[in-house]
Image (cartoon, rainbow, N blue to C red; front, side, top):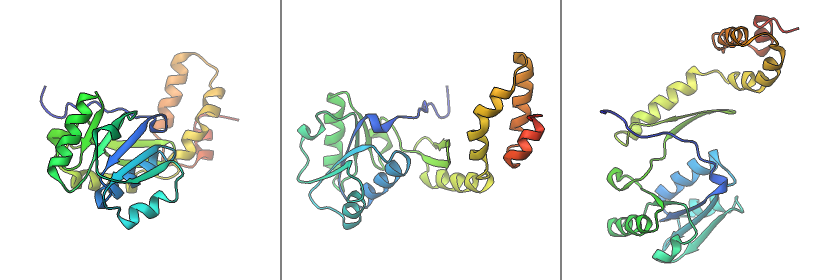
Length: 203
């Protein structure tokens, strides 16, 4: 099959051990992406030189550990997810080799052919989360699509999601009736929750 063959999944990162090799500006981007979505994720950062902003961000999270040292394969022990983002191509390649030998998932920043996974652009509206992938072709396009969706999707969509358990509990009829009413709900996502209740005839 042609096109994007990546399989999208949503990981509970707070249950995994993540390591980032390299502590520069790219590390900062990866940290911000991870911690803004999964703030309780355990992250270990290895780097000979630590970016001041990386250190500042890490100081706000007890679950983030910085170790100032040269990378060694042993650093990967006990980890499940690896991100390599040093400014040394040889080290990044070695991280990929070491990670693969330990059957770990590795992402080498800006090097798609050395990645087992990509970090996507993410749209977040409360409990609604949308991940965007261009198959590693253009992070810039993914970013623009993210901006567009953030503008199009109303913030009130999360209010609707929070009310869904209540709405579903009121739908007492048969399955086809529930499907019909829930389909009506998806057509009015931009209206206020109170209006949704009227649409669904909830007393």
